[in-house]
Image 1 (cartoon, helix red, strand yellow):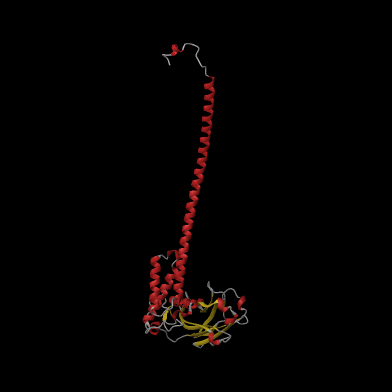
Image 2 (cartoon, one colour):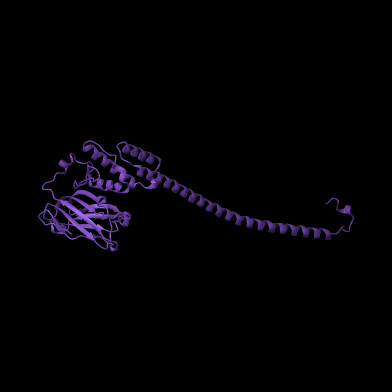
Length: 330
């Protein structure tokens, strides 16, 4: 491990983490100095609520400084490939550190499945090697460096340079663009535009689109929303962005929605069937009662007929007098 002296305004700090697979919670490195300030690295070995190694540059002196403090730094963080040095993974950014944002870095630095694969070369003998390069400029004006004030920059005006492009975007957009790059490295390969303002605005717009799509629930993806999303993807593809991954996700979302609708239809039919069955059961019960009543009446009718036949046989054939006497009565 190398520890630079406090006076240096640009330093490299190397951190070897042994028994890496045994680590669970977040871990801080030893403090190092740059530009007269204390710095350290913060790593989440199992990811910061993600399936990626998460690494940040941290400003540990936060509690010692007065309200309203800020410290600006440009920095890079690398995870060395110990088998193939050319495959070392590096991320770059710049940030104005303050009390609300005392650490800054990369939530989606490296997929854990790739990090933990011995063939990839990042984890050797259960050890990973990280390097931080930190520079404290003597003066800073982000708008002069960028050439424009990025659209939708965050409140603090923090901007970051997309490491795989030469453009600057707001820190919020930066994180989204990094995430897309981790999922599909070929997204920006053919993206190239002249100037600074237009590419920045387009990348900011693309990040907004990604954020909107991420916040859209599958059951909210109606036909109109799907059409608009497909049109936006086509527009972004016109400037060289490879969005095959996003198009595939959109198609998957449509399939999921269709499946969800099918499930809802099945559930609705099942519910209606249960009601119908309950009605049938109720009618069946009433029918059995009615049948029993019919049988009772039929038995009563048969009994009455039988009694009538018996009584008719027992009636006298004659009243014992001349029938003419009853002629006027009958």
